Length: 473
Ligand SMILES: [Fe+2]
Ligand SMILES: [Fe+2]
Image (tube, rainbow, N blue to C red; front, side, top):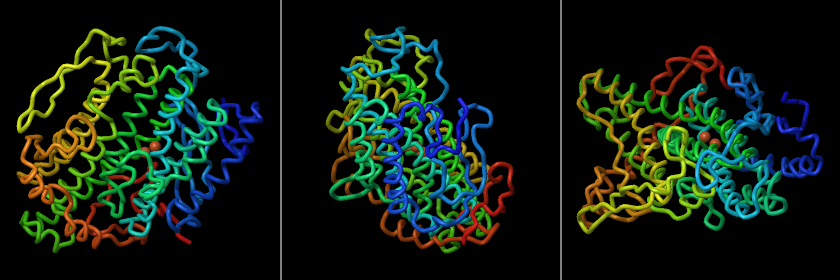
C-alpha cells in the first residue's frame, strides 16, 4: 500500500478507513510531541538534520534522505507486507493459520510483551538526550539524531498495536509509555539497562552496539510471533535497527583506530601516555565493554523461565530465525545449563522450552563477538598483543542463575571479598568516567572531528564524510 505523506500520521495500515483508531492516535500524537520536546534531544530542535525517513516497506528504496527539523519528522506506522500463506512457525499451534486478531486468552500476556518492548524505545531517547552537546562531529551528531527519531518511530509502532488491538487497556498503556522516564526514581523504565545514564559517547557507542543488539534479538523473536500484525511490525523495525548497531560498531572501531594511531605516534601502550595525548586507552575500552555487555545480557531474562516456555508453547514469542531450527515444537529436547555450585559450577538439565531465553542470549553473544573479532584484527594489524574480549555470561549478572554470584570476567567463581576488591578494575572507575567525560566537547565545524576518535571510512547515503549533516541555526 502506498504511503500518503499528506496524512497527519503517515501509514501503510489504511488508518483512514478506521476513524475511531485514527482519532485515538491523533489524540496521542500531541502527547508524543510534548514528550519529544521535553525529553527528546536537548536543544537542536530547530537544526536542519540530514535524516532518513521511512517511506515504504520495500526492501529496495524504503527510505528517503533529506533535511528535517526533528519535531517535524514524519513518524509513521509501517508494517511489513502481509504474507497470506504465513503459518504459525513454532509451539503448540505449529502449522496453523497465524492470527490477525488476538485470541482472548493471550491478550494480557501479549499486551505485556508489547509494552515491555515499547518502553525501551523512548527510554533510549531519554538516556541519550544530552549527547548532542558533546558530539565529536556533525556526522556523529546526525547519527545520534537518526537513532533518536527512529526509536521514536518504534514507539509509534508499538503504540499503534496497543491502540488497534487492545482497546481501552491499550490506550492507557500508550499514555503510560510517555509517563515512565529513564532513571526516574518514582516511575522508572521497565528494564534495568534503560535506566542507566549515558553521559558520554563511548557509552553511547557501547549502548548502540550491545543494547540495540538486544533490541535486534527481541525484535527477531517477536517477528516470529503468531500474532501477525506484531510480527509484521517487528520485521520492519529491524530494517531501521541495523543502522543503530552500525553506529555502535563503527563508533567503537573509530575510537580504537584513533588510539592505535596515538600508540604508534608515541610508540607506547602506556595508558597514562595515551590519555595525555587525548585518546582512549584500550583497557578503558574493555571496561566500558564489560559494563554494557553484562548489563545487556540481563535483558534476555532468566536462563530457566516458565514464562519463556509458555510464550513459546503459545506461539507468542519464538526463537530468532526459528526456521533454522529442526524441531519447532521442542517438547522432547533438553537443554544443559551451567549453574553455580559453591565455588565451582555444575550442569543442570532443563526442558528446552524453559531455556528459550538462554537460547536467544546465546545467539546474541555470538553476534556480539563478531564485532570484537573485527576490533581485535585492527589491534593485531597494528602489532599489539592486547585483545578485547566479551566477559563471560556469568559475569556481573543481576538476573538468572548467576545473579549476584561473584565471578571474574572469565566466569570463574571467586569469593565475594575478591570480587569486591577487583570489580573496580573490571568496570569503568570514577577516574575512567571523569577522563572520558573530559574528552567530550561538541565539535560542530563542518568536516572536523574530535581528537579521540578517527573519522568514519565513508559518509551517509554516499555523501562525503565532511558533508554538512546538521545545519545548526
Ligand atoms: Fe528501537
Ligand atoms: Fe535501536
